[in-house]
Structure formats: C-alpha cells, structure tokens
Image (cartoon, rainbow, N blue to C red; front, side, top):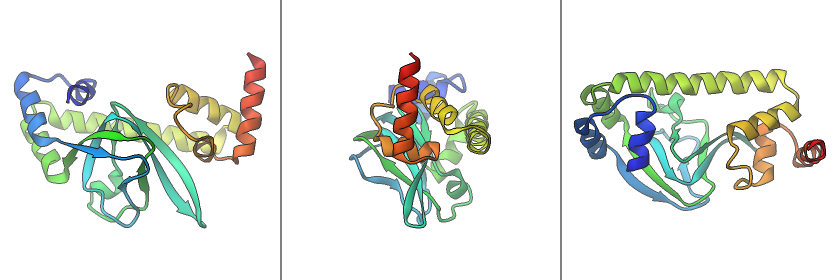
Length: 191
C-alpha cells in the first residue's frame, strides 16, 4: 500500500497513526484486463487508487463507445456524480491492463474524513483536482482543434500512449482513428 500512502501524501501530511487508519480502511483488489470497475446503471460504491495498471472511462452514445478519461498508477478513480449521492452511474470504468487496486467504500471514506487528521482537506483537494481536470477537458473539446487535444493527451499521459489502443485515444480526442493517424504522422514529421 506504499503507492496509496504516497498518493494521499501528495495532498496532505500523514502521521504513522494516519497511515495505520488508512491501511485499515482501504481494501486490496485485483482486476483483470477488460473487467469493469463500474458499469453504467450501477451505483459507484468505492473510491479507488490504482496501485498498478490503467483504466478508461467511457459512455455509449448511439451504440458507439466514447472514451472520456483515463487514470493510471497513483491516481484515484471514481464516478463522483454517482458516488457522492449514491445514484446510478451513467459511465463505465474498464481496466485496460491487469490492475492492483486499493478501494475504500462510501462509509469508510466518511471514517477517513473523521479519523485522519487532514482527511477532510484531502477530500476537498482531490475533488478540486478532478473538477479542474474536467473543466479543462471540456474547454479543450469546445475550443481546441484535434491536434492540440492530442498534444494535451500526450502531455497529460506521457507514459501511457503506447499502452492504450489508438482507437481509445482517438475517441478521447474526439476524432476517428484515421484522423489520429494523420495527426500523428504530421507531428512525427515536425520532429
């Protein structure tokens, strides 16, 4: 659980007592490539820290999968729109690799906020980061051409470009795979 502890430490300081509380509240889980952490229609019951592996968020629109986000090692995964009110989700979260996960339930995160010295601060800072990422992504979809959105993907996820099928990246950028191939070719030609 060292990566989990370090991921939380990015937001707040932790004492040894805090670490012991965290280790008691989180559960380790394995997930195989292709399995879902969450399927649309189900309630998101956990916040998850990825210890190893990689996931994508997607929705299905008119029968077509639209990738909306990715999370990698050391990052937190959750559909907060489902988790916070405990309402059915409208998104799917799928493992793109075999994953080692650390999960905390809705009730245990409340204990985390109460028992860990800066627990509530952690929750606020983590959600602020999610909010800023979401706003930037939506702004980019409306304002930036596909080439810029692809470059933003590469800067946000520099270490996963080779780990993700190109059609998921194209979907995330908002274009067809053929268009992504042309953009990649143009960018390669510039260097």
